[in-house]
Image 1 (cartoon, rainbow, N blue to C red):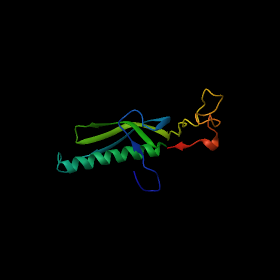
Image 2 (cartoon, rainbow, N blue to C red; image 1 turned 120 degrees about the vertical axis):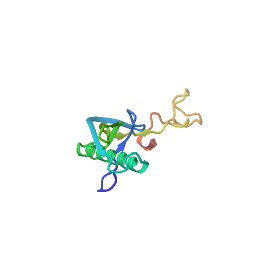
Image 3 (cartoon, helix red, strand yellow; image 1 turned 180 degrees about the horizontal axis):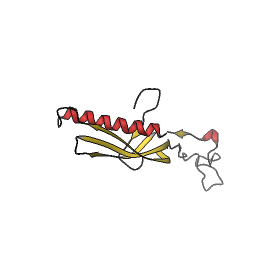
Image 4 (cartoon, rainbow, N blue to C red; image 1 turned 45 degrees about the vertical axis):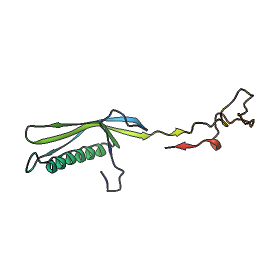
Length: 131
């Protein structure tokens, strides 16, 4: 969902999101949409699928989620399509930089390979953060 000043809800078919940590499981959410006309045509099926996913994302946002994991689709006998999954709060994982050889301790009394004092563990001044 884009617009209304909100970040988009991420929806994935997997049980985890690479680079994110699930910090809260909110619960099941779903969205349904029905075939209106010309059932079976590719444009109509795409429209129904997109509408079901949009409704599922709206339900997730209403419950305070920022992502949906384990998303699946199910069909009904009346030409309806249901998108469902588990609404979660997910936070991006902060990865600290891997120290360079000059920052890691060596066997020479805490000095790096170049002979300068090693910085291990890295101090806040010597730490980089990647997203």
